[in-house]
Length: 540
Ligand code: N01
Image 1 (cartoon, helix red, strand yellow):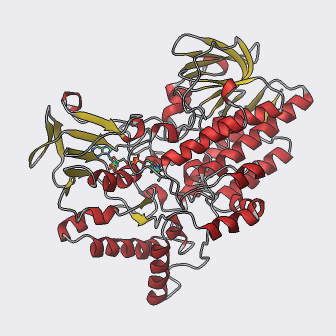
Image 2 (cartoon, helix red, strand yellow; image 1 turned 180 degrees about the vertical axis):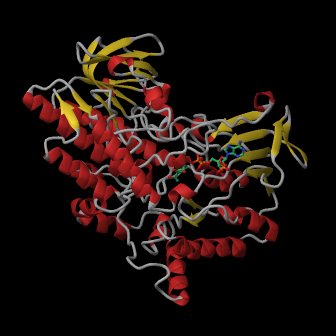
Image 3 (tube, rainbow, N blue to C red; image 1 turned 30 degrees about the vertical axis):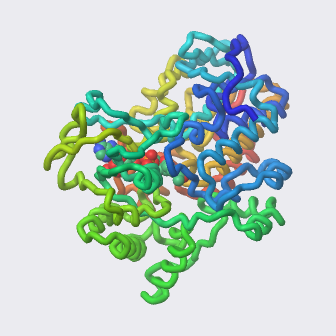
């Protein structure tokens, strides 16, 4: 199995389709396009496949969707053959899986690695996209399919002096391909999102000192990760297709038990027992304790307070515990985190928390970080500061659609799309798990498969009828954007300053970007639209 690319090869001048990105979305799209007999190539910036799992190699990186579910379902032989070693797979194992998929379906011969797309222009007369790479290569394709991921544009914060630091610096989302040695070092970690929460316990076990700079605490649930239980694996594999079908209809594309009751309908003893049971089981299924946790603030408060009390009971220093206990957003409205020994790590003598709400960072210096209460010296700074989510990677490409319309201008006030699949004015350009689709609120592989299958169905429909162009209509897009906002407003999500809302990027429009109507409902909508002859799309 090759983990790195063969030598770069020249791009063909003309193709049926260009796919941007060799993560799970791009790999499966290529496989399906081959099935339609289309000529397609993936253009990938990295020198290997895997997308998120190629870049995010920080210590402790692991998926928080269970392995038995975070995997492709399109091939029964693949899902039967592959064995996951843990309940929640770690990054190296998921990357091995992505490489296995690339090899198993012989995908590599149609992937151009180390090839970053710079621009894409639509030629109306020819119904073709001209896609140019940063190296100046150009390819003409009928279809341009963006499989660039939702969390792939890593972001460094605008902290003064950031370039002056003389020690080692790392961003969790661009981690080097070698082991970073923390032993004996004084390490600063900036950020306390999912990436930091996974990395901090592992770094703390190795480094001399770890100082965590926290602006906003997050809710985290223990993963209870463990080696794969053979019986559990066998149970999944005994009827994988039926279980996958059920998962596809769930709110998040993950098969788990969602309690249909309201948290405030039951008495406190019942509620506590349910939260305790889910805390002991581990993982994001905690949020399924009551169906209305993301809908009703009073219900949400009960779960949030339960987790705050857990933090207070685990973390021995009361001031640190209180600083770690989130109070500024309902639980689940910022992406819930899943950890292994995160809160316990603050009981280690070599770990300290700096509460930036009390003592903000003033500057990064040559040797450390200065906050309002003084300077601390470090050998290493780890930036776990997140991503320009959902739109970042798409807008890095200079897209010009019909009449030269720029995607950046169309999305000036927030992303607008029809179903998160297409943008009006950009014919024959598709997004896999784009803004306006459930994407980051779901099991990404389930959503990737649904989008790829749906796009394949549409392209097959066009092939059968000799059609050259498909475009979302302005009216359908407008209605979808309005519907997306209405559904979001019924939940507690918009109340949090989250990256779902674009709130982590100064100046980014505050719009709830993913579709929160649920993976199952969304799938049914997409299927109905297709069955009605692709309602809301203009085909020619
Ligand atoms: O990024 P984040 P992430 N000064 O944006 C802080 C997925 N994921 O890479 O909240 C100080 O969540 C920022 O503070 P604040 C998952 O969907 C999945 O951790 O803006 N701090 C925040 O604490 C996740 O949600 C998995 O106040 C600054 C942190 O940096 C998403 O990726 C694992 C700052 C960024 O947190 C992103 O997670 C990992 C500044 N100037 C990630 N700027 C799994 O499946 C930012 N921060 C397990």
